[in-house]
Image 1: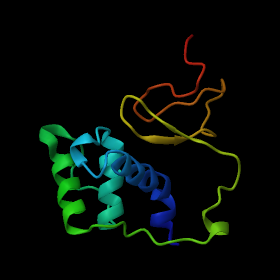
Image 2 (image 1 turned 45 degrees about the vertical axis):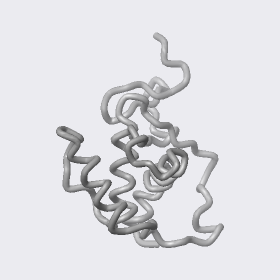
Image 3 (image 1 turned 120 degrees about the vertical axis):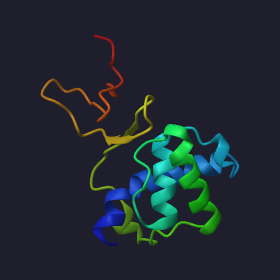
Image 4 (image 1 turned 45 degrees about the horizontal axis):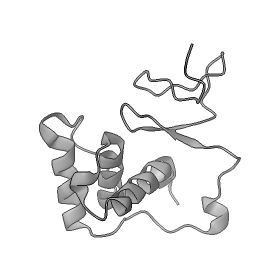
Length: 124
């Protein structure tokens, strides 16, 4: 699997799972990170829309899902798809982005790129 799919694998898997959980109804997929993941999954490219302002990301995702009914992500062998460690991906409740649990700061906290604290002990 090339580096593009390796870099986006967790995002694509989470997005496809969210769409499956929503019964295939894209209107019920609410996280921007999942919309981004569906666009990557169905087009093999990152989204053109930079945000979901005016539903731009949702419109792009809907077009991608309509044109491509299944993911373009290559199937991997069990050895290739197994995580290198016991790492867990954490989903940001604010923006829906996925962050590896190993991405800790010097105080042992995990933060999303949007600034939201993700680790389970989030009260200061």
